[in-house]
Length: 370
Image (tube, rainbow, N blue to C red; front, top):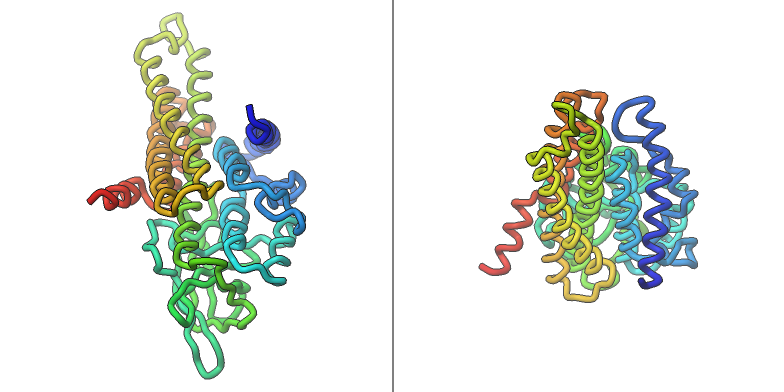
């Protein structure tokens, strides 16, 4: 076993314990899901996993952040970790170094600010090279126009990182305060209560030149990598969710009795649990490869895109199927509020659509061979 594997296993064990305690506390107030205090995440040093050591971070990779995403899914935790850390830190790491960028990264590590990366509408697979916002030059200076819907954690963010088309048409990142005139952030209610999504719209919002940040390399390639990263992060969440549902179902089948014997002894229940396990193992292989591709950047961007689409389509489809089957195998209690299974099912359904549905990602894969 490599040193990196041991570190990730230890991180997983700590995360599972910490989030498990938060989950048990949350269930005392409301069944299913748990609120994770932002200060707890900062104290666990999870906010700066991918931030350079000189800025207060851990100098780790996306592989470590993926472990946290998986455990957040396992606990169906309510947390802005996806938008504020996984997507925002990933976006900032793609930019040219600057004093303002480095200061924001240090503030994220300390838990002093909760940002949100607005890379596109979260309910679909964004077109490559088509930022949701655009910068326009006026007599008074640069202004921002555009809109993005279902953006993770935008409604609670204290700072926004908007992907926009610059004056030359190439993507740039615009950092702005969500309260500036001309910019509006509206919370969008969804059935899944464990996620916070927002509609971000700009109509002539003024932009300071200091707040327009350039990508370090090919801007269009970087923006595509960020969207693939988002898809893989959601796949990790769905994988953790699926494993939690299988464990809960197997545990229930061992103790629930019918006709004087545990229902887990019935062939139909055994086969259903075995099918769930097979789906999880396939999804884990694909997610593991996608995480490696994103973390190591060992292959070409096209290879990363293929791995991301395969992981997203498989893991998120499997999560919906597994949560639905878990509800059925729990019998009548599975359909009650108290069981909490509905929380997992709702999150799985939302995950399936975030950053591209399985059908959209499969069309993307098919286009490579057309």
